[in-house]
Image (cartoon, rainbow, N blue to C red; front, side):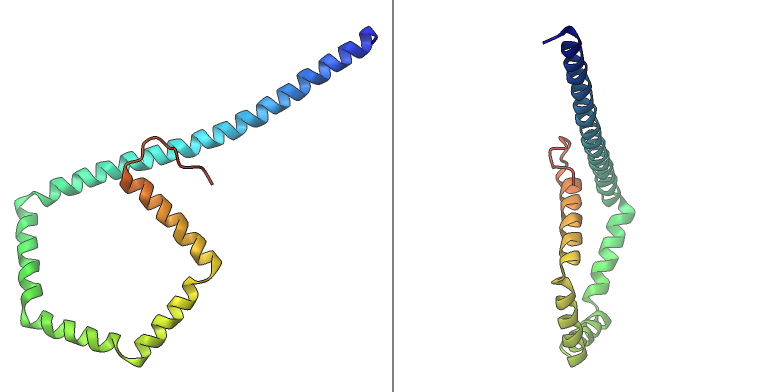
Length: 135
């Protein structure tokens, strides 16, 4: 092998290594970015949950919960519940339920539901590791 061929081969090796490294780096950065977004979303969800717990413990929240309980036990609430049950058992409601079930069987809807389910799981599980794969 001549000196010229060796240098060309050396140059080619460096170029391919550089290109390979930059592609891996770009993929790694994209994965790290998604992981950072998941971590940030999980942290914010935990902050919101903590604030919700704090709010639930206030006197105003306890009074509101008591008032809501009293409303649900009233006669008007019982009549409304009976009316809703009648509506649910009607033919129109059954047709609508069937149409919704048919729509939910579509692949695009299934994929969207799965994506939403994963996001909610990440948010509520408090997963800070970012171990779920980026899509």
